[in-house]
Length: 541
Image (spheres, helix red, strand yellow):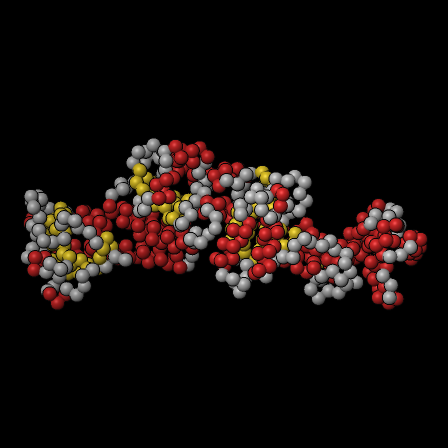
């Protein structure tokens, strides 16, 4: 892209009196000295001449006619331009060669700025770097906010005493009071619908005239760029220079807010900040209302690792959003994250039951499990949580659950509780597996060395040597709360045989199952042993 005529006119005004042809417009890639017809090789160049007849002779080209004043000072402007067919006419004390050199410097200055902006985008230096590079050219204060009106970047080297902007920079987001003002003055509608610049000179909210450009998707606006004209007025030159910056900001807008997102961009930005743990409690309370998510509810978070080989990511994302509605869906680092807060049943121990669905549909987990079966994917589910500040922990829980969960299906002894879902793994059910993973130090599993685990390991070794099933028998005895009749029924043996076998186990291994602490230690040891046995490369004891 070349340099606009408005920018050229702005720069030339300091060299003398300047006239523009009616309806003059366009962009130019270069400026050249006219030395004859042979030099007219491009129609996107601005040619300089000092002969008023040249523009009339070559009407297909753009000319700047330089009329040097006599006596070394700028002459009084005549009532009409000295060369009416020229695109621009400059009358001043500078000779043509000096004007040519000046414009070459102007073109070089802006070209270097654009190259620096492009280099910053390629190196992914971020929005703040773009604003820093633009301060010498635009001079005004600029802020960039996301759809939730969270501050992403702002001009740091340009002073600003606008109260709204100062408050935005101080808090990092627009406060509820400022959002109320925006709604009152109907600012959101033009941001979301109007193309190009939205210029507001009412000063009803901001102290200065503001120039706003919002990048839009099918769902809503994405990035919003606001320039306060606290140093330079919003004339055509400034808007063209501002456009050079916006072309580079558009790169980030398209990357961060693609058209195929299933949720609104404001919701996406808020959820991403929640799972990243980048918001404090005050910021969460400020922003949750604007995206329609309650601060407190019966929340549950799902994490599904997407597989590009299973289906196009956009298709998978759309299917998940449709099947789990009205839950919120977000793509985070190649994984699909679902925040559900639609359960109204306080007695629901497994997060979602069909009777609790606000849409009177099958439970979210059931719908999601069937969809995951089609794509052959696994999903982790967090523990239920009550407030949005716990979202980060829930995200980590669900991520660990999908990593650990598939191995918990390995249960040759039949000691684990069966899940109602094939592809959804709850962190509550694999928490012990997670703790066992964390219990390894210097290659040794510290949890397996507890007294309870040592007892169970000894029982398992004797079972393998003698062909007995005391390991499974003791588990059933503990799981059925030492009720001998129930244990006998499940294991198909006489009640007296249960009493005989437990007495022998207690005597052989020095345990007392009437002691609550011992029962707890042994039950926990079973969980640890099963979790450890399910780890890759491990064998059952």
